[in-house]
Length: 328
Image (tube, rainbow, N blue to C red; front, side, top):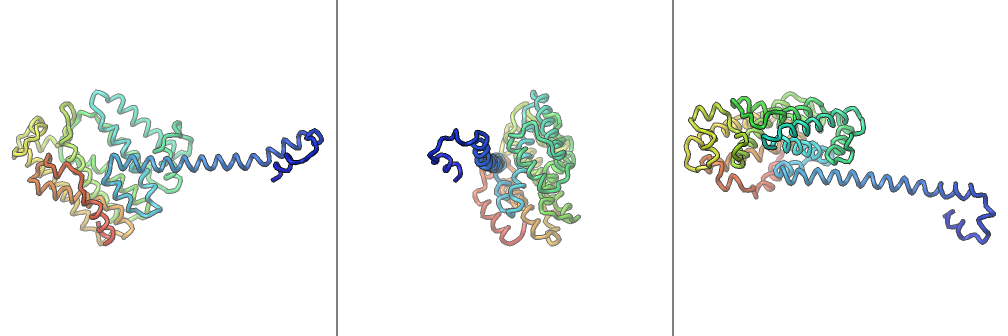
């Protein structure tokens, strides 16, 4: 209003001291500048949030659906954590001749996590996943150990196979169980039964995810099948890579891995009565695990069967019904 008045005065501005005009303009331009800065910051946060959602949707569709069903207070933070997990999983999926690059990328994420906890400005502040992670850590008290586990678990030689089933379970615990622990912390719940269930569900989900990656393994990449099972059933890695549907030895290996995942799933679900309803939403990935294992059983443990490779079109409805009933 005052700037308009200054322009509409009939007398010359030379009659008004220069510093008065300058100060008046500065006084009224400053709030506008601050408003633009706030709008830019808000738009940047919104874009970072959308980026994380899109990243999870593209690379981890089943968990994307599960995360959509979380409460408003946890959804944005959960997408930030899952987006971080996607970025780390990409590092672990790189081919063996890029080992040095893998270590550099993992070190970058490890250092960035430290900086977020130290409330320092990240040296890549424009990185949307880090921006959302910093926002999440500023709003919630999350255990740094679990976040660092997500990084260290991927810091293994790309051509290093799992020697035993126990090794596969430990890897799943460090990755998928750690992520579930963080999601539980978002809900502000501390309970031994919840942690026990999260541990078993994470192992089940991790084992199933590693098994589902087998049909996409190329020569020169590590096969996600424990060496002890290959030796026990007299199966070579080459036989797995051929994907023959009638190979009984391969089917036996797949069955034994699926049985391990099923046992952990059943243990997680046996604690359902002791799990608060709020946390059951976090455990909805159990539906993904169960439905895949059922398709695998129906296909006689042929991991290259179309039903095991295609997207589950009925999964959104199944998740909705489980969530509606307060079950996982």
